[in-house]
Image (tube, rainbow, N blue to C red; front, side, top):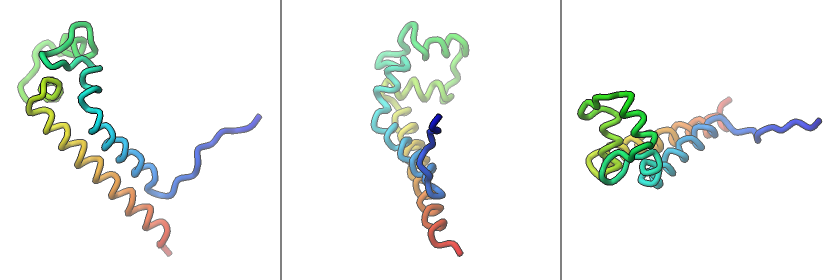
Length: 107
């Protein structure tokens, strides 16, 4: 029986791909939030977000859930999440690129 294997990545290749995925998520943040139930006028009934909110009961201001809710409504959370994804994505790609370059030139 033949075995399936992933192509071999250079050191840092996985980090570059993961960072790229974070940057792509930045482009589709709005639809992802909407799909989770963080709507323009609040939490959508019966959604994943509604279930999480019912579990939390009281949502503290500036909490992770509040940031997601704000982002879904187009508030301050958009900038918070976009900033996190930009910094994390670019940093991860940069570290991956350094590791990939280092693996080629290391003695």
